[in-house]
Amino acid sequence: MRPFRIARRRFTSCCGHGTPPAEQWTGRRDFLTMAAAGMAGFAATLRSREAAAQVRAFPPPPPAVSPVEGLIDFHLHTAPDVFGRALDDDEAAALYHDNGIEAVVMKSHVVPTADRAWLLRKHLPALKAFGGIVLNAAVGGVNPDAVQWMWRMQGGFGRVVWFPTFDADHHVKHFKDAPEGVKVLGPDGSVLRPVRDALKICAQQKLVVCTGHLSPAEALAVARAAREAGCDRIVITHSEFEVVNLSLEEMKQSAALGAKMEICAMGPLMGPGAHLPWMRSWRQVPVKESAERIKAVGAEHFLLATDLGQTGNPSPPDGYKLLVGGLLAEGITKDQIRVMGREVPGRLLMG
Image: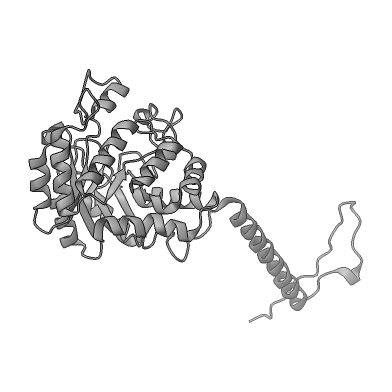
């Protein structure tokens, strides 16, 4: 076999002049040395370009610890439902578990969810699931019997009673959906008897009373009646949303009554520029505004939730992360996040 050789070769410069003999490549060693150096330089250039590209174009790696680990989502919508939902109960539970979320409250506007909480715990015992009932027309409106049967459901996981939401008299009149809806106050402003009867059951069974889509005046009236009945677990449902929209002064009044104000991840997604048409009629709630109210009233008077699960919206865990990240960026501390996301809802549900 012939030894490997590099033929002597005369290079011509761009000006057409030949190179001196001393600068000619004459052997294999020189060629391999030059090739190795060139490849090393090329690889270094690629690494440099890759590093620069990662900084410019790629998102950061996932955090070592989920920013919502150990928190509770007090307001989740899942399938099956009469409205479009992106996830069923099991799918949502798996996402919550993967993100370290400790507990969830399952909500439907038309059916009780205490039984679904029992089934979810059976399928995924690590996630503490709770349910409840919304006092809309589908269950007879403000119906004490419906509350009574809800909390009796096997497992005892039906812990929340919402007063009317989209069937509330205030809601349908605000959005011009119907001439009137389910009422909680009489013509003279007094709390109606069925409301007081339902609140009595809530007090006896230590259920959480949520105000639904009542007006600020109605929500405060129900909160006062709840305290008179002996309820010590009261929540102003998504207190900043368009249909409720408590003022700062009304939030302070609610706090004085011992009520907690719910702050939801869906708030910043709403408004005239919302990505989903049906959300454009709602007022957008900037995270900065939520943070300012938390600072003014005190984190111990608020609880965090998502109110997510709708088709087309971010997944509930992702939405929760966006809310928490936004609040942290606006000066809310991690300790305050834990108070609102874990301690307050934990006492309401399990205290």
